[in-house]
Length: 362
Image 1 (cartoon, rainbow, N blue to C red):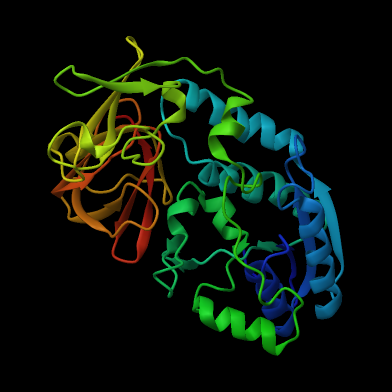
Image 2 (image 1 turned 90 degrees about the horizontal axis):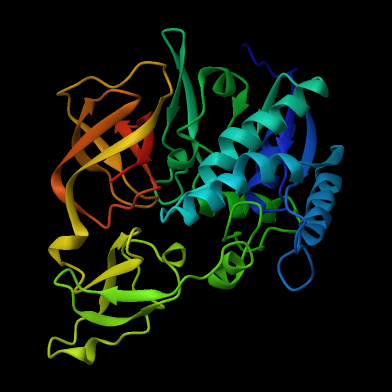
């Protein structure tokens, strides 16, 4: 789809500085810009946390400063059905999901995109740090210029149709430049800190939050050798590589090394823990993954050198890809990776191009 300077672009405005500057830049470039604020969580949206009401006030203030219309839409039902139910199922199964990835493919670039098209939009835009390039009739997802902010990892499940309607105005900017632009143009949220926490839910004491939806089921913490070193409150509440919140110190033997979660035995309700960041149980040379999604529609080449991330902010790790049956794949790394976590995503890159990815099985 051809997007020109007269096109109508609906911008997802969260109240944060990134989406605000994205809207500002598009307005300056001559697009017909409409802001859209999404409310996607209602269960405990109150003043105790950073509520969506405060974010909406910020988004409306920015829209007024820029001189664009803005509307609010409620996708809470879609979020619960498409994202949060999956989030809980995965934790209950002992895996560690990444809801931000599903938020993008199911809410921001599906429910939001559908609504924007009803508003007459030719395209949607967000404050993500990534780039889109059309090459040989296909849309490619590229890393952002700012390596420290690149969000292609979270966008790897987008498809050709979604990318053809998307714009990422911040892809060629550094975060520091975005802050300066916001301040220079008098945006009221120019100094607002970046949001963290669960996608669309925000910052919560995570264990307490999860306990509202999943029951605790205490059991033993054991070493790989079978020694009992503590008690856990329920396997759903821990993730591979976790160090904090285990309740066991390093003084149980002479090493003084900290403890880390290295595995889960769901059948026996055991949490496997080891001492030392470099323990072999925390290192993996290969993984298998399922539910593969490739942005171009075609899987990566076999026996071709690629790079992959098994978690956000991880450095690209050289690897090779092998296609397996039933939409599964195997990734073999040149060097062992730390705390590869079932339920998280492995995302494959060919240089600056994000090819797609899959959900880590083991």
